[in-house]
Amino acid sequence: MALTETFGKYQLHLIPFQLSETGQWAPYLMIHKFNEENQRFICVLEKHRVSGDVTFTNADEAVDEARRVGNALIASGKV
Image (cartoon, rainbow, N blue to C red; front, side, top):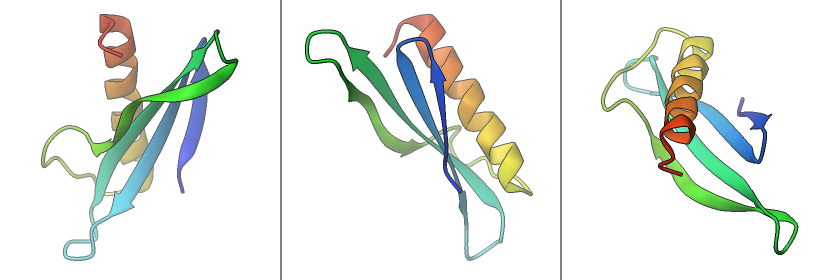
């Protein structure tokens, strides 16, 4: 149940992943940025797990954490 949200020139791909061993949910994130030159989105952050080993009891919480991290990366100018 991946969710894509667009913020200005960025697309956040928020991906909750259920861990088979615990049933908990881990937050994953991928970010694309719109490239004016070729008029398409390009990947600026490959899919990866965010927030270390933190897990959540449901997918919505994992999505919220991925969103929080993605917005922080954009605001800091790191992507």
